[in-house]
Image (tube, rainbow, N blue to C red; front, top):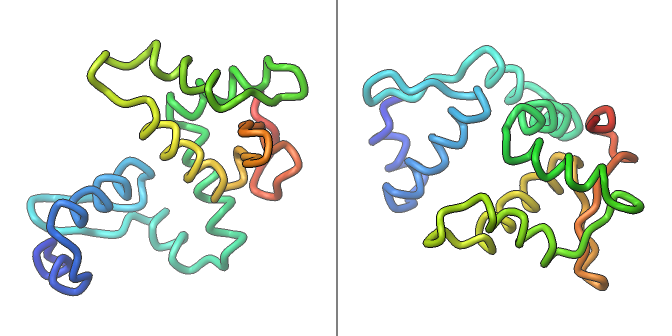
Length: 141
């Protein structure tokens, strides 16, 4: 589909449509030759899957991203595979340019990680943990 036609269907601002499309590319669900948005074979598999199948596919794709691997690695080395959110944010901030907000990256990592059952978050203790009990995939090594 043409990206401009897709934008018309969603009624979001064009920047949001571009951001979602880029995320789809990052996860290898979409390809964007010129101004077209095309589902990849994995994207078609994702669309055809049920909710649990989608979580498993997303989990596998997240495990390939360096930032998710980094967070999984620091969690796997922590006691009980848990860390305070502030500790994770500090680790992220130390790897970002000074002008980049670590809070926003943390929220994105946690949001995607929770959805795909790669990470969990406990609001009561403000801790991020490795979701080794999740149904989406094997524990991260």
